[in-house]
Length: 159
Image (cartoon, rainbow, N blue to C red; front, side, top):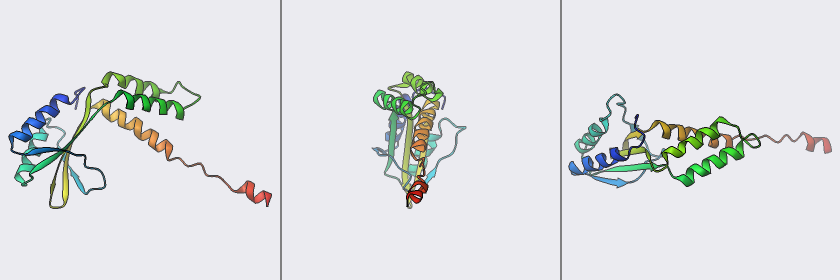
């Protein structure tokens, strides 16, 4: 999506879901559940087709989750990026994270979902800045997963 915030879209979704006699349950569907992701990126209103598919499948409700960028979370991201790049504080990722402050308070991600025959069908909307935010978070997570192997050569030489 090319929008800066999905707040208006979220309001439209809630009204559309209720207008179809369904409920939006505040819940996020994680990776541990078998899922099918709705793919229709050319149609900006594909979420309406998704809601109609949920109703046709007999779903009594849809899960709905959204993410609003919080200043504290952004500050934590910048701090962690600075710590992982210390002493070099002139890292492009730090500047990129700091530019995200323009989006504090904006909704960057919305997930709709419904269960049908043991599978959860998902529809997701994101903004470009949120995808970039996630990439920065993932880079930190990947950095944290780097394991420096301690060779036991020193121990072997002492014995």
